[in-house]
Length: 582
Ligand code: FES
Ligand code: MG
Image 1 (cartoon, rainbow, N blue to C red):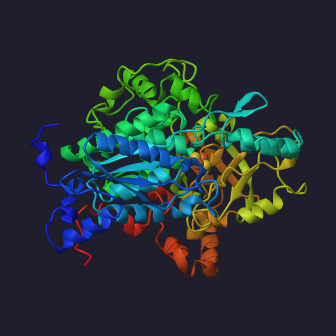
Image 2 (cartoon, protein in one colour):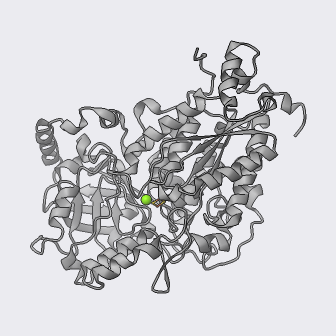
């Protein structure tokens, strides 16, 4: 780093750099932590935005992670300041961690802008923590680097590997089908989650970690190193060193989060068999930097991209094997060599392009990161659907679906909401057969509220007992990235917002045609309109939406096709230093 660059005026000097009453106040209170004078003399101040929480088990090791980031910052001549933000834990938070993703993003944005920092390190892991922190940081636009907590070691059951989340869905179906006992089911809990870290399948946490790396917001290999692998802590240290240089280079997040970066991420999502949740989160992040991104971009950019990563839930392996096989750089290399990486010259946080980082990445295992000629799935892109049942779109993940069901016509079995589904799905008298289409309403952003991951409705036990493993399911909900099935998700507008999903009736014919991106409710247009009018005339406000955070949420949340951000949070509000507090 040249000395000339180091003369750049630091944002933090607006707090600590003046010899007056204000400077006294800002410095003096900080000194109660045992900080000597010279620390305030022009060192870059680096915020470490920590989502540590014992209630977010996937991020519970983040104090150790932060210590290693600090070592790197100190080594490079920076001054680290760690601060907590709302921690969205997927496993404990009810009704869903998605309800508070935007709340966390507001916490992140205001914490960064209002405090003395020149750059920020985002410590992320569990599903929603990655988009929440990137959204908040993008709305401020300081130099920013992502450090992910890393995945858990492989789950173990009966001497075999089992995958986070995916095993839960599978074992639960086996209990319902009478194949295993409740005792065996409960006994699987401990081996399912046996180390620190995030879900070890290609669920939403792993997907978003890969998105952060393919967007260029982290150092190479950030996505896949296991949480307990010493190399994870080396990466944290190196990220701490790098963020200090990024201050002198003024390498802001907006220089990384370009339209080109999002196109690279969409292609990467297909190649890794990533979660459908990425569709929502990438849209929300793009919205914060003003990058246009449409649902159809997932078709235009992603369609035809082979899935190369053979991980559960689409394939066989887990994140441990993915790292040992070469991790995300191996996948990006394969894509680039086949001319499937749309923007090789996209800039990343280490100052190099994505292609410079991965062009010679070692690939150690062709079973886990498959060659282009032997993909897990020939077309792994997210399928975007439209039609009179989803005028503003819906999505399906082909790599998790049954090919034969991706062209399907069947009669609707309708559940008014998740409670109605749970109350009736076990009933042997439920009129349903393998060709039925399970339809669930009122699980969208406003309806649930928070658009819970309930879209992968478990099948009726009587069909499971017949050996039926998959059926077409349609809802305005999301689905866990660890789940699988021929599941149509994110139907927009949602039922609660008056989308046509609200008026589907028992026995209606529904057509799903993935090849032609079509989702059709086969009733006459006039009938659909009269049902929608009758529905609108019948609506009553929900008393639970009348106050508190939930009121803010239902009034301002955007539909799935717009990323479920709050309408008033879109855009970048910059890093201008606010006026003094005294
Ligand atoms: Fe936290 Fe899966 S529950 S990553
Ligand atoms: Mg999840």
